[in-house]
Image (cartoon, rainbow, N blue to C red; front, side, top):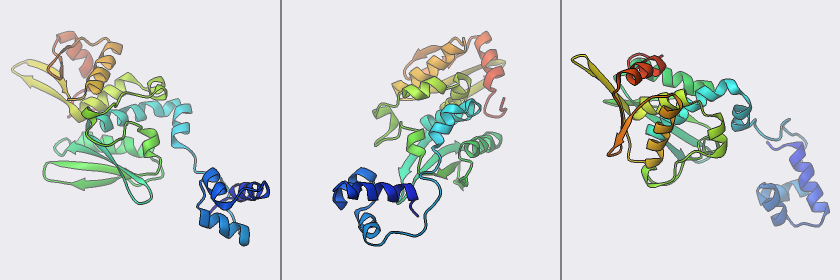
Length: 241
């Protein structure tokens, strides 16, 4: 159902002499609806012009910046957005063996999409957590055609201003990172074909004063102080800090 404000705008434009097609282009209201309103004005309207913008609410709510940063990392690492008939769907693939991590990711997704149901689809070795929402591409503008490493997935200005390095790093690590421990020696690594994502991971490390080496599309963290610091900041995939 449309709003009273929309109907009044259509009426005002009609009085200015604009035709139905022009009104439709200006208001983004279907031409058929405009024609119906002119011939038969509706009697009932909804109260609000638009649903609250999740993006606007997010930008001004600092408490949500950590949640968003984490989900951004997950999406950039192993997420996918597709267009449905009337909305968008975001899916994030996660390794099935990390039960605590998967529950954590699901809870963080629910924090951002409070009004939407979070779905889980089980496969043999992984799960997909997913959500439907018409505003997803506004929140994750890195969406586009083709694989991520073949297109620009650098952050927008508003994303850079609110991103929390620790949480973005956690999301990237939970999606495309690994932690190895063998015979008393342990290290972290993050590998990805996208230069944008590798640079983003390295920048987060720089912000957190974590030393790393880089080569062949892989960032490695193996110096003892930096490994211990990263353990304290994000843990590993079995232990969520």
